[in-house]
Length: 144
Image: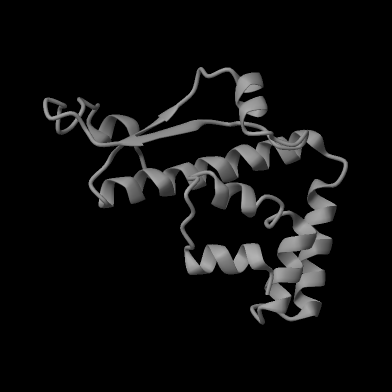
């Protein structure tokens, strides 16, 4: 099994909080992820080949589609972080408005990696509101 995948599964802790992210860089790229899934016995090589072919057909040579998918994936990942932080007693907040060039430089992002949003996680202030004011659900949601 790929060591980076094993580290994620084992939830190995490091002294540098960003090391797990850096260690898994590339793990979820199409080729590496498919090999890891096959090697771990989660998917047959034939099934992996079919999924890889479908993904290549959908995304190869389509930079806008790739960017859109990166933003969707980052959004779902950030949502999971927000919920996980709440479960563990932390406050959290997605953030935009940052300098993407500085973030790219600070985290040594590769040319095909884009910063989509930042997630701030920490202890909530003691005088923080327990719930921010929001519109009623009926004003922002409807079922078709």
